[in-house]
Image 1 (cartoon, helix red, strand yellow):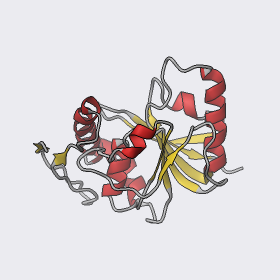
Image 2: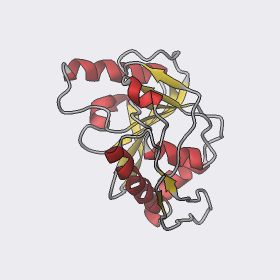
Image 3: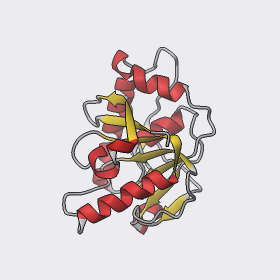
Image 4: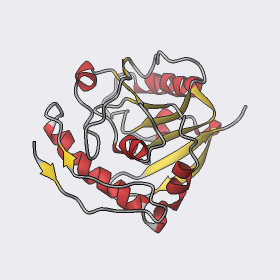
Length: 208
């Protein structure tokens, strides 16, 4: 197993440490090779002055929030960062591809062991109404989606259904990102996180 050593970035508040990345033997090679770079970029920005908004949000979490990584693939780097912070325990990974869910989650620096993996379509999420505090969805919608507009509306409805009032959506800014998966009329943008590798935007669901 190949080890990649990376520089350590410690935030002033000491939120997150860092460790060598061990590539999962089950992970897709090209995907797994990309993740350490994305993880390091997110972490470096998080622990810089530009990351203050996201740092404050992480520090404000109670530690009992339920998170689902929607269209997870092998797991997103921002989910790994939230797990590393100690604030998120046992995130839920949901993906339509069984191969992704049967592989070890090698997001970021090390394998994530999760007991909660759901093989399902984001258009029909088998979770209860208002049962999730945080939804992470990174690059879920592609350019070649069949019936993309119809699918987009169904995903938006499911996100609003399962997300608690005042819950958070963390997604990528730009192409295939927030404009695809949420109806911005029902959300308030609270953090614009400008990492060079993966710009993120965080929305809070408006109260009814």
